[in-house]
Length: 240
Ligand SMILES: C[S@@+](CC[C@H](N)C(=O)[O-])C[C@H]1O[C@@H](n2cnc3c(N)ncnc32)[C@H](O)[C@@H]1O
Image (tube, rainbow, N blue to C red; front, side, top):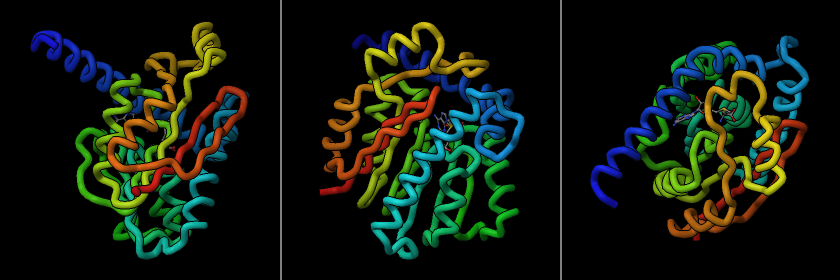
């Protein structure tokens, strides 16, 4: 690729990320903070997204609980939102969790919720960071429902980045590409409301699995979590 093409692509990627950040610092924060709570100020679509997302979180917690030994494991919750996974994971006894999100507003709310739940910051630590800047090594790296903001090639690159940070386990969820979803998305029914202000990408599962395989990870668990207006493929990978 010519260097000017590469520069154009990088600038487009950065400006899209800034748009996503702007959204999750403002209207997106208000919207998703309500969805990821027990607030009654949600419409039918938002209530269904909440139900579907809770299935994803519950699956992850059940799988991790089955694996056991949580107290001796380190976790990275990449793109943690308001802590919908990190808080119950800490309460299940996870040794240490490094949770981060692009949005300051999301992590501030997550830290507030953790404080309210009496979870010490030595066990659950929040920082504002984009996925690209994350580094370190963790037993388990988890990234739920963030890839909606990544087109296929960027999502695969991110899977390789997160896999490089994971010693044993990598868990990701994303909206899978299906012809039906492509049609629904086309007529604007999948991501209704102001979330239309950010682009939403569906991903081909084979590419995600291949990206993980390139880093030595194989899929060991899969689930498809659904509710009206929510459709998310969850895959747990293990090294080896
Ligand atoms: C739909 S929410 C999911 C939050 C959380 N993972 C959960 O399942 O509860 C998507 C989150 O991804 C974050 N996000 C989007 N792009 C990101 C990026 N490039 N780096 C880090 N976080 C990002 C947003 O700020 C938002 O909090």
